[in-house]
Image (cartoon, rainbow, N blue to C red; front, side):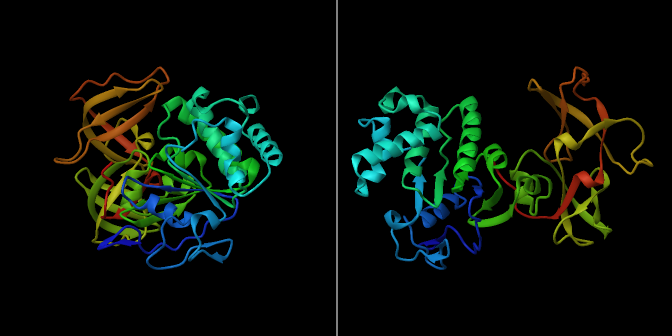
Length: 356
């Protein structure tokens, strides 16, 4: 999809399965909202074809497509009651008043708000408004529900609650949900599959575990969740693992796509996969070991992040410890050894890293 000389989305070939909860995840400006608008019909692709249920959507406007779109601002009508909001799409289609009212009541039962039928929108909480927006979209019986960052305006606790609500509604109805978000927690928690995007390109598609544990590109590894990364040169590749010469010495991890001996690479290891150890730099247990000085610690309640000075000019290395009552008191400047299993790290060829 091009806007003048700017290509917003390119080389996207993707199938979304009927009845799945599918999320596009990426930073602002990566092209995910453009994709949603292409699916909904508010934009026409400059190249390629969009099919819904096998039907080519070229030339078919938003009001004729089997889709419903929920915007960030929800776009509810403040002067209408909840029931009238839900039934609005049916009224536009010429459905009689009694049938509209009955459908609104059914959908309010579905979203667990039967008591709100005659309330005004101004009388609802943020979470209730969200559920009304979902009910209104479902009223026209879409095959595909499109959601453009609908939880972004809610506070953290309510956002977490609404994740579960939306997922439960999707499972009860069996409608295909296509969800747009920059929030990794939302995407990983709610989705059957996730497409991670950067600069208009889909970097990887997979379920939450694959995206988190087996990133295919440096962008995915650095954007999804917290990660430590160490730059180096690949010494050798064998048995599905690569040894990388880093400023902390040779370290071993699972070899990702395109890793070859002699190539520049990045080794990624999650903070929760690191442990504190004693002893030498290598050992018979096969663990990777490195030594670094404590920079500072951040206590976050159920866990603590311990920051260690990285290689010159590079990011700190972060160790995450669960608050089990035995978190060590590590003073700044203290040198400690860290270890991790090779299978808990991934080595990828140098490439784009996430900036947010």
